[in-house]
Each structure stands twice: as structure tokens, then as C-alpha cells.
Image 1 (cartoon, one colour):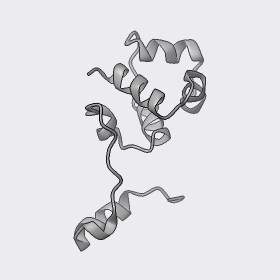
Image 2 (cartoon, one colour):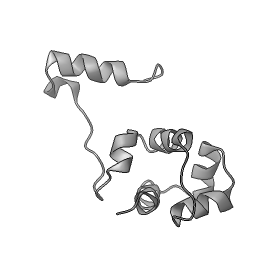
Image 3 (cartoon, helix red, strand yellow):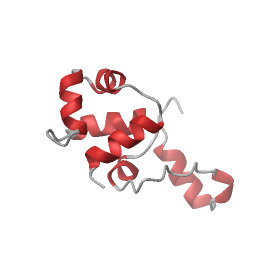
Image 4 (cartoon, one colour):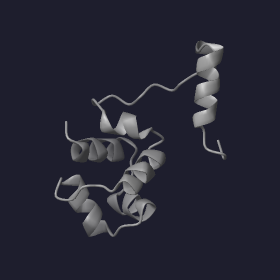
Length: 93
């Protein structure tokens, strides 16, 4: 599955409109439409913004296999893994 297909599938699963995603990443709707059609690549900054909007990591987005990632539960992880995951959180999280 291409990144363009992944982004479109996830957007649809999350019931978001193209315009909503376009606004979030700072492009117009026609530019975003080209991204979903595979006619334009995302910049790194746009990729990060899309991942954040979808509540995913960029790695999860790039390697999307059609299944939404499972929610990570800290209690299931070792202390070292818990610290690593906590360090990855945004300030607001």
C-alpha cells in the first residue's frame, strides 16, 4: 500500500474531510487531493503534521498495513519502555 493510499484510508476511517486535513497541514484542498492521489509527495513537516492529526507516529503512518495501531498501555511495558514512551509524548499529552 502506498503512503497516499494509507493517508486516504486513515482519513476516511477517522471520518475526516480532505479540507480538514489540508487545513491542519497548511496546504489548500487541491494540493492535499494531489497528495492522496500520489501526484505530490508530503514534506517531512507535512508528514509529521498528518501523523499528529491521526494520532500516529510517522513510522506507523509510513508502514501502515491497513490496521490501525493498537493503543499503547504503559502498564504492559517494562520500566525502561515506559520511560522511553513517556519521553516521546508531546508536552500537552
